[in-house]
Every structure is written in structure tokens, then in C-alpha cells.
Image 1 (cartoon, each protein chain N blue to C red):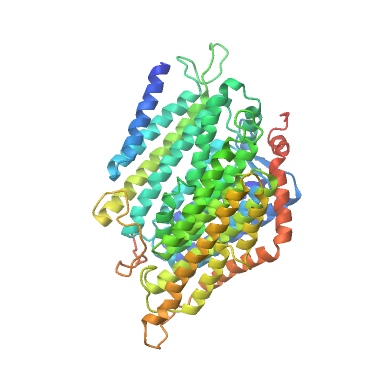
Image 2: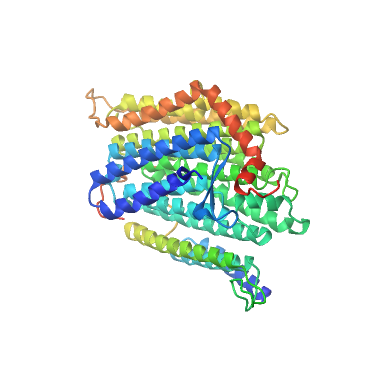
Length: 504
Length: 126
């Protein structure tokens, strides 16, 4: 048994209370320990990524209880990729938070950050549906704290909405799990996969109810229309670096959909069939449309980026809803890309807010410090997000378009292409309002004072470089991702790893 | 007994949904608590209802009731209790900060030039 599999959960779980208990009065110590912890987490996640890409799915039996009686963690290519993405993003975002001084604007930023990482990594690793609920709650409760970090009236109000919305989501999750348990008598995902396949016809109705409830829960997490209402206010009022980290949180919803509906309810399941694809596809198209309209209509930069994030979830779920290996490969590529692109844009918005004092798009404001540099970064992020060449958004959308040549091709292609155009227009409008028209409002030639935050700018540059690397290395990356989706569709390997005695 | 448990779950869920859709924080929080009670009973019932049976297998017992749902419901209770406490604190904070306890945002817009900067250093606030 490879004990490193549990390290991404244990390390932040131990580090967070240690930070709270031992060094709560010393910010520099917190910064050192927390950054070192995240750096180690990144190293571990890269090792796990290497392990997962050379080995079949590996299982970690907690307390050495055999499945399905104990909880298992499963490391396969998908979970290793998600953890590596989370860890790399977290490290960069944390450096940004330290450089921009966000972590000093309230207490316990670093402890909450580590708890957040614990929840996210746990959700990606676990092979047990109820344990997935528990890790969802861990990541949510840490995100509540991070979201209202720094305080302020708007942020607290948005926070209450966010918590209330997610508490309803958690209740739905429990209803879904209890319905599924009442039919199958198990909550271990591999065991569920075996049991659902041989379900008697009489129980199929209850199973479908549970499965659709579960889809609703993941749709709340993944901000699918009509359950996306929590996202714009939350993301636009959350502190910039926190919003950038949250870019990976919507992906937890997408991950859960991919995992559950390829492993437990694959399209050839007699009791459910193509039910989920039929629900998911229209919802995803509407999500894309709502996102694009929001980008056009937003009155603030942060809100616009939040809607762009919703739109990118729409594109992602359109690919996921195909449930074919090719489409999932495209979905994974777009997932990595959109996580990084969303993070870049939220960090740029934070740079703007910090210097301009607001992010309103209603009126042009005078130029602010480091105007040109920030404009260039925004330009890069916007190109990536809207899906224009030369960055990876273009390739991602191209892969998604290529993978959706089915019966619904006309609708999907129209939706993706038209919304891309609207998003481009929305971003150009925002960019010219914030960066170009600024020069027209002032007559003085004095350059406004900038803030020396070299680390913050470096972080945004590194994220942009990561997108460039994703574009240049698109060939090898998609090959690797194709193996990942092939592994997902090879359910027998996963099930045999968890339950060595099961047939399937 | 099935009818009693089922109608209790249904009634509590209905009350919870109604209260959650109100626009003040207090009814919303009561509604969320109601929903979590409903789901706790529901989880408990998903292991089948049995009267007078132990949760542990013993040789002389006639049968046993599912112990796993009891463990699940315990976890769910702990989490929902903690979450309710948290949302009460956050709602109180929002109420004290803004002076009203409506759930919705005043206006769903951006940081306007007139509004105070979001990022004032606030030492010691939660």
C-alpha cells in the first residue's frame, strides 16, 4: 500500500491546526510554514501524478479495513491530475496573497487555506460517496471563512447567501446519498458500480431519483444553470486570491459528475441509461449562454469574470455530457485551461481593484499605477478566457467542438461559437473602459504611483506562461489525457483495484 | 410507523423549503435547520425501520438493525449543527455591519467609486 496517497489530505490537515494553535500571532511564521506546506504538497502531488501515469489505479485502505466496509482513497490518473492542478494553483495563489498583503487583512488566512486544500484534495481522492460528502463539507466550511476574509458589509452579505445556498446543497446531497443507500445498501463507489449494474427493475425508479438528486448537488457545485445564482456575488465579493483559488472549486463539481457518471452510472446502465446526458446537455448550453450574457451585461470587472467562469463551466459540461472518451479528453484539457485562465483574470481584477479603488465599468476612471502592465496581463487573460488564438482556450474549444460531432452538433457548435463572440465583445468593452478610456479622463501627464509587488506580478506571469506551455505542449498533454479518459472508461480496472473479489 | 416517519420527513421538508425561501435571515436559518432535521430522519429510515432490534449482531438476538445509517446520521448531525452555528454567526455579522437582515444583496453590482474600498485592513474582525 502506497502511503503517499493519503499525504495530500494529512499534510494540510495537520498543518492547519498547527498554524492556528502555535503561530496565530505571528504572520511571518504563518507565511513561511503555510507556503512550505503547500510547496511540499505540490511536490507530493507531482510524484503522485508520475505514479498514477505509470501504474493502474491504486487504492489506499484507511485503517486497512477491506472495501466496502472501510473508507478507501483511490489514486488514478484523473484524481492525480486534479490534485496536481489544485496544488500548483494553490501555491501560486498563496504567493500572490502574501505579496499583495491579503493574508494580513484578517485572521487565520493560512489556516483556512490549508483546510481548504485538505477538503479539495480529499474530495478528489476519495472512493466513497459519503466520504465525498464529508470532504465537500470540509472544503465548504473553509471556503466560507476564506470568502468573508477581510470583512466588509457586501462581502458578509454575499457570504451569508453563499452559505445558505450551499447548506441547501448539502441537504440535497444527504437526501441523494440516503436514497441510493436505501436501494443498494452501500456507499463505496466501486461497490455501487457493481450493485447498480445488477439492480432489480423494481428499484430502478428510486435509484433514478437518487442519481438525479446527486446530479443536482454537483450542478450546484459546478454552477450549472439554473443553480448558478450563488456564483457571481460570491466570486466577485470574495478577496481576489480566494476567488482565484475558488476557480478550482467549481471544478470539484465537474470532477464529481465525471467520476460518478462514468463509474457508477455509465450510459449503458439499464436503470438510468442516457438520462444524465439528456439533462446535462441542455443545462450546459444554457449555462454557456447565461455566462456570455452576464459577461456582456456586468457592471463590474469582478462580476464579469465570475460570469466568464460560469460560461467556461458551460463549455466544460457540454463536453462532459457527451460521455465519450474523446469528449472527456477535450473536457479535461478545457478544465485545466479554464481553471488557470479564471485564476489569472481574478488576480488581474484584484490588481485593478487595489490600484483603481473600484472595478466599475459604468464610468471611466483616471489611469492608475502600473496601468500598462496590468492592461497587458488582462489582455492575455481575456484572450485565454474568450478562446482566441494563440493561447490554450482556442485549442480547448477546438477540441470540444471536434468531440461534439454528434446529433446535437448544430446546436452545440452554434452555442459555443456565438457565445465566444459575445464573450470577446464583452471583454473588449471592459478592457477599453478600464484601460483605454482612462487616458481620456485626465489631462495631467504625471504618472500615478504604482505599488511594488514584484511577486504578485510574477505569479500572474507564471500562470500565463503555464497557459502558453499548455498550448505548446498540447500534443503530449492530450495524449496523456486520452489515456486518462481511457482509464475512466475501463471501469473493471478501478473496481478490481478496490474490490479484488468482485466480478465485473 | 412508516406513514408517521414518511409524513414527518415530508412535512419538515415542506416547512424547511418554505422558510428557506423567505427573505430575512432568521426564517432562512430556521428553515435550513428544519431541512437538516428532515434529512437526518430520512437517512435513519434509509436503513429500514425496525423496532426493538439491536444495532450489533449478537447470537441471541432475533435480528439486527442497520448500524451504518446510525453512523451516517451522527456525522450528518455534527456537520449540520456546526454549519448552522456558522451561518448564525455570519448572519449576525452581516446584520451588525449593514443594519438589516435581508438575504438578498441591495444591488447586484460592482464596487462603485463611491463605495468604500473593500480591502480596508480590519484587524480582529471575523
